[in-house]
Length: 323
Image (tube, rainbow, N blue to C red):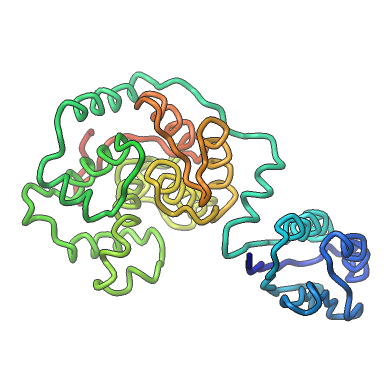
Protein backbone atom coordinates (compact mmCIF):
# COMPACT_ATOMS: atom_id res chain seq x y z
CA UNK A 1 0.00 0.00 0.00
CA UNK A 2 1.02 3.64 -0.28
CA UNK A 3 -0.33 6.66 1.53
CA UNK A 4 0.78 10.28 1.74
CA UNK A 5 0.68 11.79 5.22
CA UNK A 6 0.49 15.59 5.60
CA UNK A 7 1.35 17.20 8.93
CA UNK A 8 1.64 20.78 10.13
CA UNK A 9 1.71 22.39 13.55
CA UNK A 10 3.39 24.63 16.11
CA UNK A 11 5.26 23.43 19.19
CA UNK A 12 4.18 24.60 22.63
CA UNK A 13 6.53 27.20 24.14
CA UNK A 14 7.81 24.77 26.75
CA UNK A 15 8.80 22.15 24.12
CA UNK A 16 11.54 22.02 21.50
CA UNK A 17 12.67 19.76 18.61
CA UNK A 18 14.68 17.57 21.01
CA UNK A 19 11.42 16.58 22.73
CA UNK A 20 10.09 15.54 19.32
CA UNK A 21 13.28 13.58 18.65
CA UNK A 22 12.92 11.68 21.96
CA UNK A 23 9.41 10.47 21.10
CA UNK A 24 10.46 9.56 17.56
CA UNK A 25 13.41 7.55 18.90
CA UNK A 26 11.08 5.50 21.09
CA UNK A 27 8.97 4.56 18.05
CA UNK A 28 11.71 3.79 15.52
CA UNK A 29 11.81 0.02 15.96
CA UNK A 30 8.04 -0.35 15.55
CA UNK A 31 7.98 1.60 12.30
CA UNK A 32 11.04 -0.07 10.75
CA UNK A 33 12.79 3.26 10.48
CA UNK A 34 16.19 4.75 11.21
CA UNK A 35 17.31 8.29 11.89
CA UNK A 36 19.50 9.70 9.16
CA UNK A 37 19.60 13.16 10.74
CA UNK A 38 18.95 14.15 14.35
CA UNK A 39 19.36 17.91 14.07
CA UNK A 40 16.98 20.30 12.37
CA UNK A 41 15.52 18.81 10.25
CA UNK A 42 14.93 15.44 11.91
CA UNK A 43 14.83 12.82 9.13
CA UNK A 44 13.61 9.23 9.37
CA UNK A 45 14.26 6.76 6.55
CA UNK A 46 11.87 3.85 6.00
CA UNK A 47 12.19 0.47 4.35
CA UNK A 48 15.86 0.87 3.42
CA UNK A 49 15.09 3.95 1.36
CA UNK A 50 12.23 2.37 -0.59
CA UNK A 51 9.82 4.91 0.88
CA UNK A 52 10.05 8.69 1.15
CA UNK A 53 11.64 9.88 4.40
CA UNK A 54 9.61 11.40 7.20
CA UNK A 55 10.96 14.93 7.74
CA UNK A 56 10.40 17.29 10.67
CA UNK A 57 11.84 20.61 9.53
CA UNK A 58 11.22 23.25 12.20
CA UNK A 59 11.03 26.91 11.25
CA UNK A 60 10.40 29.03 14.35
CA UNK A 61 9.05 25.90 16.03
CA UNK A 62 6.62 25.27 13.17
CA UNK A 63 6.49 22.30 10.78
CA UNK A 64 4.63 21.85 7.51
CA UNK A 65 5.70 18.67 5.71
CA UNK A 66 4.45 15.49 4.06
CA UNK A 67 5.69 11.94 3.53
CA UNK A 68 4.61 9.25 1.08
CA UNK A 69 4.89 5.91 2.82
CA UNK A 70 5.13 2.86 0.53
CA UNK A 71 5.17 -0.57 2.08
CA UNK A 72 3.29 -3.80 2.58
CA UNK A 73 3.00 -4.00 6.37
CA UNK A 74 -0.16 -2.09 7.26
CA UNK A 75 0.40 -2.70 10.99
CA UNK A 76 3.73 -0.91 10.65
CA UNK A 77 2.02 1.96 8.86
CA UNK A 78 -0.46 2.49 11.68
CA UNK A 79 2.42 2.57 14.16
CA UNK A 80 3.47 5.79 12.41
CA UNK A 81 0.05 7.13 13.36
CA UNK A 82 0.66 5.98 16.96
CA UNK A 83 3.81 8.07 16.94
CA UNK A 84 1.86 11.12 15.74
CA UNK A 85 -0.76 10.53 18.45
CA UNK A 86 1.97 10.81 21.09
CA UNK A 87 3.62 13.78 19.35
CA UNK A 88 0.39 15.78 19.48
CA UNK A 89 0.89 16.43 23.20
CA UNK A 90 3.98 18.55 22.36
CA UNK A 91 2.13 20.86 19.99
CA UNK A 92 -0.31 23.73 20.42
CA UNK A 93 -1.94 22.25 17.36
CA UNK A 94 -0.83 19.42 15.11
CA UNK A 95 -3.01 18.89 12.05
CA UNK A 96 -2.62 15.54 10.34
CA UNK A 97 -4.27 14.48 7.10
CA UNK A 98 -3.69 11.77 4.52
CA UNK A 99 -4.88 11.10 1.00
CA UNK A 100 -6.78 7.95 1.99
CA UNK A 101 -8.69 9.25 5.03
CA UNK A 102 -6.98 6.63 7.19
CA UNK A 103 -5.87 8.98 10.00
CA UNK A 104 -9.40 10.10 10.88
CA UNK A 105 -10.73 6.56 10.80
CA UNK A 106 -7.85 5.22 12.91
CA UNK A 107 -8.05 7.87 15.61
CA UNK A 108 -11.86 7.64 15.75
CA UNK A 109 -11.57 3.98 16.70
CA UNK A 110 -9.58 4.97 19.79
CA UNK A 111 -12.24 7.37 21.12
CA UNK A 112 -15.50 6.52 22.90
CA UNK A 113 -18.45 6.93 20.53
CA UNK A 114 -20.12 10.34 20.68
CA UNK A 115 -23.20 9.15 18.78
CA UNK A 116 -26.29 7.45 20.13
CA UNK A 117 -29.14 5.95 18.16
CA UNK A 118 -32.47 7.53 19.01
CA UNK A 119 -36.08 6.95 17.91
CA UNK A 120 -37.74 9.18 15.33
CA UNK A 121 -39.58 12.31 16.46
CA UNK A 122 -43.17 12.92 15.40
CA UNK A 123 -41.98 15.31 12.67
CA UNK A 124 -39.45 12.77 11.41
CA UNK A 125 -42.16 10.13 11.27
CA UNK A 126 -43.64 12.19 8.42
CA UNK A 127 -40.55 11.32 6.39
CA UNK A 128 -41.24 7.67 7.09
CA UNK A 129 -44.78 8.16 5.78
CA UNK A 130 -43.33 9.64 2.58
CA UNK A 131 -41.04 6.62 2.23
CA UNK A 132 -43.96 4.22 2.60
CA UNK A 133 -45.84 6.11 -0.10
CA UNK A 134 -42.73 5.84 -2.29
CA UNK A 135 -42.70 2.07 -1.79
CA UNK A 136 -46.12 1.88 -3.43
CA UNK A 137 -45.41 4.49 -6.10
CA UNK A 138 -42.48 3.91 -8.48
CA UNK A 139 -40.35 6.93 -9.49
CA UNK A 140 -41.87 9.16 -12.15
CA UNK A 141 -39.89 10.19 -15.24
CA UNK A 142 -38.39 13.27 -13.59
CA UNK A 143 -37.26 11.34 -10.51
CA UNK A 144 -35.76 8.61 -12.66
CA UNK A 145 -33.90 11.14 -14.81
CA UNK A 146 -32.33 12.82 -11.77
CA UNK A 147 -31.55 9.55 -10.01
CA UNK A 148 -29.89 8.17 -13.16
CA UNK A 149 -28.00 11.44 -13.64
CA UNK A 150 -26.62 11.21 -10.10
CA UNK A 151 -25.11 7.79 -10.74
CA UNK A 152 -25.90 6.85 -7.13
CA UNK A 153 -26.73 3.20 -6.46
CA UNK A 154 -27.44 2.83 -2.74
CA UNK A 155 -28.21 -0.51 -1.16
CA UNK A 156 -31.48 1.01 0.04
CA UNK A 157 -33.04 3.81 -2.02
CA UNK A 158 -35.18 5.28 0.78
CA UNK A 159 -32.95 8.30 1.52
CA UNK A 160 -32.14 8.90 -2.15
CA UNK A 161 -35.84 9.09 -3.08
CA UNK A 162 -36.40 11.79 -0.45
CA UNK A 163 -33.35 13.76 -1.62
CA UNK A 164 -34.43 13.61 -5.25
CA UNK A 165 -38.03 14.58 -4.49
CA UNK A 166 -36.90 17.56 -2.41
CA UNK A 167 -34.41 18.57 -5.10
CA UNK A 168 -37.25 18.65 -7.63
CA UNK A 169 -39.15 21.06 -5.36
CA UNK A 170 -36.08 23.18 -4.62
CA UNK A 171 -35.29 23.63 -8.31
CA UNK A 172 -38.98 24.00 -9.35
CA UNK A 173 -38.71 21.16 -11.88
CA UNK A 174 -42.15 20.38 -13.31
CA UNK A 175 -41.09 18.54 -16.46
CA UNK A 176 -38.02 16.80 -17.84
CA UNK A 177 -37.28 19.92 -19.90
CA UNK A 178 -37.01 21.93 -16.66
CA UNK A 179 -33.95 19.97 -15.58
CA UNK A 180 -31.23 22.26 -16.93
CA UNK A 181 -27.67 21.54 -15.82
CA UNK A 182 -26.62 25.17 -16.24
CA UNK A 183 -29.36 26.34 -13.85
CA UNK A 184 -28.39 23.71 -11.26
CA UNK A 185 -24.71 24.52 -11.74
CA UNK A 186 -25.29 28.26 -11.25
CA UNK A 187 -27.44 27.72 -8.16
CA UNK A 188 -24.84 25.41 -6.60
CA UNK A 189 -22.17 28.05 -7.16
CA UNK A 190 -24.39 30.69 -5.55
CA UNK A 191 -24.61 28.48 -2.48
CA UNK A 192 -20.81 28.31 -2.45
CA UNK A 193 -21.00 25.16 -0.35
CA UNK A 194 -17.45 24.20 -1.30
CA UNK A 195 -14.88 25.62 -3.68
CA UNK A 196 -14.50 22.27 -5.42
CA UNK A 197 -12.67 22.20 -8.73
CA UNK A 198 -15.46 20.31 -10.46
CA UNK A 199 -17.70 23.39 -10.15
CA UNK A 200 -15.34 25.63 -12.07
CA UNK A 201 -16.50 24.34 -15.45
CA UNK A 202 -19.96 23.24 -16.57
CA UNK A 203 -18.45 20.36 -18.56
CA UNK A 204 -17.71 18.63 -15.23
CA UNK A 205 -21.38 18.80 -14.22
CA UNK A 206 -22.08 15.08 -14.71
CA UNK A 207 -19.00 14.10 -12.71
CA UNK A 208 -19.97 16.27 -9.76
CA UNK A 209 -23.76 16.00 -9.84
CA UNK A 210 -23.98 13.38 -7.06
CA UNK A 211 -22.19 15.85 -4.75
CA UNK A 212 -24.21 18.81 -6.02
CA UNK A 213 -27.50 16.98 -5.46
CA UNK A 214 -26.72 16.32 -1.80
CA UNK A 215 -25.16 19.70 -1.08
CA UNK A 216 -28.20 21.54 -2.47
CA UNK A 217 -30.40 19.34 -0.27
CA UNK A 218 -28.36 20.08 2.86
CA UNK A 219 -28.26 23.79 2.03
CA UNK A 220 -31.97 24.21 1.38
CA UNK A 221 -33.74 21.59 3.51
CA UNK A 222 -31.84 21.82 6.81
CA UNK A 223 -31.23 24.29 9.60
CA UNK A 224 -27.94 24.44 11.52
CA UNK A 225 -28.36 24.55 15.31
CA UNK A 226 -30.56 27.59 16.08
CA UNK A 227 -29.02 29.74 13.37
CA UNK A 228 -31.44 29.14 10.49
CA UNK A 229 -31.51 27.57 7.02
CA UNK A 230 -28.04 26.43 5.98
CA UNK A 231 -28.13 28.25 2.63
CA UNK A 232 -28.67 31.58 4.39
CA UNK A 233 -25.79 31.28 6.85
CA UNK A 234 -22.43 33.02 6.66
CA UNK A 235 -19.46 30.81 5.84
CA UNK A 236 -17.48 31.90 8.90
CA UNK A 237 -19.79 30.33 11.51
CA UNK A 238 -17.56 28.28 13.77
CA UNK A 239 -17.51 24.61 12.77
CA UNK A 240 -20.07 24.93 9.97
CA UNK A 241 -17.70 24.22 7.09
CA UNK A 242 -16.30 21.00 8.55
CA UNK A 243 -19.74 19.83 9.64
CA UNK A 244 -21.20 20.49 6.18
CA UNK A 245 -18.30 18.48 4.74
CA UNK A 246 -19.01 15.63 7.15
CA UNK A 247 -22.73 15.71 6.33
CA UNK A 248 -22.15 15.71 2.58
CA UNK A 249 -19.61 12.90 2.48
CA UNK A 250 -21.21 11.02 5.36
CA UNK A 251 -24.55 10.86 3.53
CA UNK A 252 -22.81 9.83 0.31
CA UNK A 253 -20.66 7.20 2.04
CA UNK A 254 -23.05 5.67 4.52
CA UNK A 255 -26.41 5.87 2.78
CA UNK A 256 -25.73 6.33 -0.93
CA UNK A 257 -22.84 3.92 -1.60
CA UNK A 258 -20.50 6.59 -2.91
CA UNK A 259 -17.24 8.26 -1.78
CA UNK A 260 -15.86 5.20 -0.05
CA UNK A 261 -12.20 6.24 0.15
CA UNK A 262 -11.78 6.96 3.85
CA UNK A 263 -13.03 9.86 5.97
CA UNK A 264 -12.35 13.48 5.11
CA UNK A 265 -12.53 14.78 8.70
CA UNK A 266 -13.03 13.54 12.29
CA UNK A 267 -16.79 14.16 12.20
CA UNK A 268 -17.31 11.88 9.21
CA UNK A 269 -15.02 9.26 10.77
CA UNK A 270 -17.19 9.30 13.89
CA UNK A 271 -20.33 8.80 11.79
CA UNK A 272 -18.85 5.92 9.84
CA UNK A 273 -17.58 4.25 13.00
CA UNK A 274 -21.08 4.55 14.47
CA UNK A 275 -22.75 2.97 11.44
CA UNK A 276 -20.15 0.20 11.23
CA UNK A 277 -21.07 -0.89 14.78
CA UNK A 278 -24.42 -2.06 13.41
CA UNK A 279 -23.86 -2.74 9.71
CA UNK A 280 -21.49 -4.68 7.47
CA UNK A 281 -18.65 -2.58 6.05
CA UNK A 282 -17.29 -3.54 2.63
CA UNK A 283 -13.55 -3.48 1.75
CA UNK A 284 -13.57 0.11 0.47
CA UNK A 285 -15.51 1.44 3.44
CA UNK A 286 -19.07 1.33 2.12
CA UNK A 287 -21.53 0.80 4.97
CA UNK A 288 -24.35 -1.50 3.91
CA UNK A 289 -27.37 0.18 5.49
CA UNK A 290 -30.03 -2.26 4.34
CA UNK A 291 -32.49 -2.38 7.24
CA UNK A 292 -36.09 -1.25 7.13
CA UNK A 293 -36.53 2.49 6.36
CA UNK A 294 -37.40 3.29 9.98
CA UNK A 295 -34.01 2.07 11.23
CA UNK A 296 -32.23 3.79 8.35
CA UNK A 297 -33.91 7.08 9.25
CA UNK A 298 -33.04 6.62 12.93
CA UNK A 299 -29.41 6.35 11.91
CA UNK A 300 -29.67 9.29 9.56
CA UNK A 301 -31.27 11.71 12.01
CA UNK A 302 -29.02 10.58 14.88
CA UNK A 303 -26.01 11.46 12.73
CA UNK A 304 -27.42 14.80 11.62
CA UNK A 305 -28.15 15.60 15.29
CA UNK A 306 -24.50 14.96 16.05
CA UNK A 307 -23.51 17.50 13.38
CA UNK A 308 -26.09 20.08 14.47
CA UNK A 309 -28.45 19.82 11.48
CA UNK A 310 -32.24 19.48 11.56
CA UNK A 311 -34.47 18.64 8.60
CA UNK A 312 -37.20 21.25 8.08
CA UNK A 313 -38.41 20.78 4.50
CA UNK A 314 -37.29 22.48 1.33
CA UNK A 315 -36.35 26.05 0.64
CA UNK A 316 -36.69 26.93 -3.03
CA UNK A 317 -34.76 29.82 -4.62
CA UNK A 318 -36.56 32.95 -3.47
CA UNK A 319 -39.05 31.20 -1.20
CA UNK A 320 -39.37 28.60 1.53
CA UNK A 321 -42.01 25.90 1.80
CA UNK A 322 -42.73 23.15 4.26
CA UNK A 323 -41.76 19.73 2.95
